[in-house]
Length: 248
Image 1: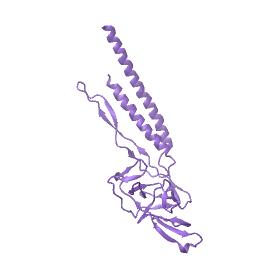
Image 2: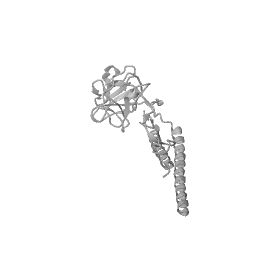
Image 3: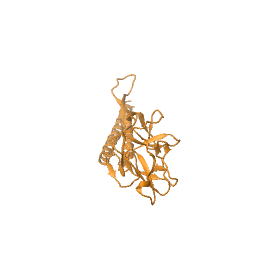
Image 4: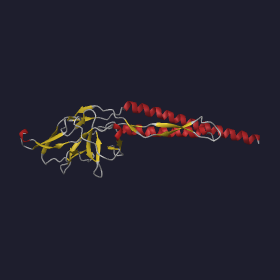
């Protein structure tokens, strides 16, 4: 069978993978702190014992992440923070380890634990940060969390902890299926005092919806072109078989 079918098939499969990535990114265009996923492919020659390597097929490489910062929007909510520049917010991952996120939309659980909207506890210098009942909180630019008991003046402000802010090298992080980032080595990153946050603000997604939509349209056209190539290859094979049967 003509190798054209295999090369066109791998191209169509690559289009489907890229379409899935763009769809996933577009679905998270409103997710705070979301980092767009990227996908790369490498080309591998189609090996043959009797012909030269004149054709190639595409294989997916390790998925990447676009680390470009998203826009910061002020919300006025004291529980919202946005990492201003490089850096990450440390949260407790499933199983007790550390994970990192740029999503600073926080909340206080019924048990008084400062956590993300998905229920991940925010980690401080001494573990999860807890907030006493009936206490209003504020977060400083260095991640320090302070609380004011209801009915008390600002003179009675107490320190509740400091959010662990880190800035490991981008190449040392892996994105998990839950959208959180972790150290490839499985360890934890050190605190970076240079990381600062913008209080009462949220970092938006870095996905460009216009680029994502244009990319999806282009991929749909590429997929259609690959399908036509496969149909042409099948048609040529059928016509060749018809000619051979007629000559015989």
